[in-house]
Image (cartoon, rainbow, N blue to C red; front, side, top):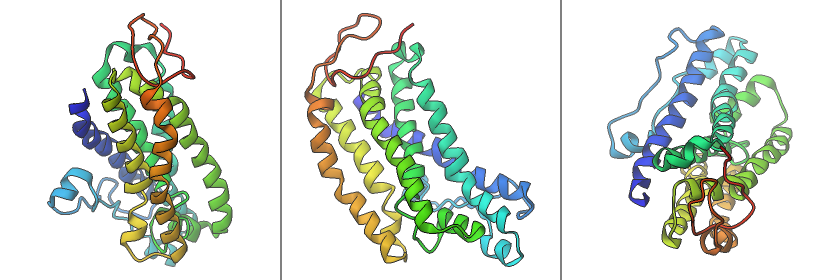
Length: 263
């Protein structure tokens, strides 16, 4: 199952990014600031873009929309990616992963597990790390609404923090069990990989492009939390024993605190 991880990463990333970008594009078309609902920019054919869609873009001219006085339309379009698509898919998947179906489908469960992580990352990439950026979704939302960025930062931070804590406390132990990761090596690799993606990969854009210094500090701080989080979660998610699943199959690994789904 561990060998499936690279495939799960690529597929789940595609499955989370494409709805995000199309949500922007379709919303822009719906509110009248774009002519074609599915005309997004796919980026080039570089290996990085093919694997991770790093150059994909919703192809919405926010500057023109704002200059034309379409403020709420631009704000809603910007919000649609992380606020509607990513958040909605995360909540739906968070509910779905607790269902008994996944007990007998470890490969599908592992893919859903990674999809949850990617959807969460598509929100945490903007809140809090890019609240003060000079571009991207939060910037366009603030430009359209006139909201105070500090209010967006505080409110958004609490919501994202709740989701991150829930992911590590409940989703990750459950996902590891449903994926049938019985060895400490498999659980350790998953813990490290997911933490690097959530706090490193999704924070990286704020360091690679010209941003407000506050955005760069937030991104750097996010990356600095990777090692402490792995260390703090190591005993519970890698070393601690795991009670049997609901169907009676013995498992090893991450410990108490998460009930297996009941049939």
